[in-house]
Image 1 (cartoon, helix red, strand yellow):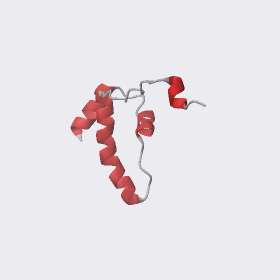
Image 2: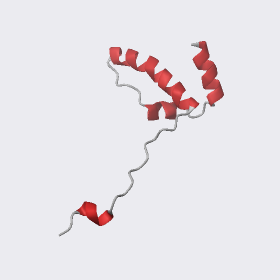
Image 3: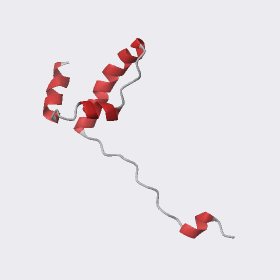
Image 4: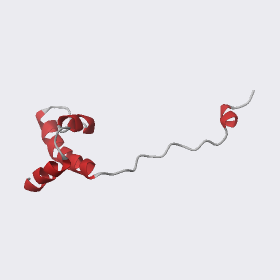
Length: 70
């Protein structure tokens, strides 16, 4: 009986997601400001996926203007 590792050879691991976008950086900033106050109030933190869903219709340029005003 052979080991499973020898049957498939040295397969390359999947690449890690390293792509960063301007919109992603903005979402990180929003989450850094929103989640601490939610934790104090006893609410669960907002995830990136949920925030993406909530802000789906807003263009990145408008999000930049909002981030600069705050």
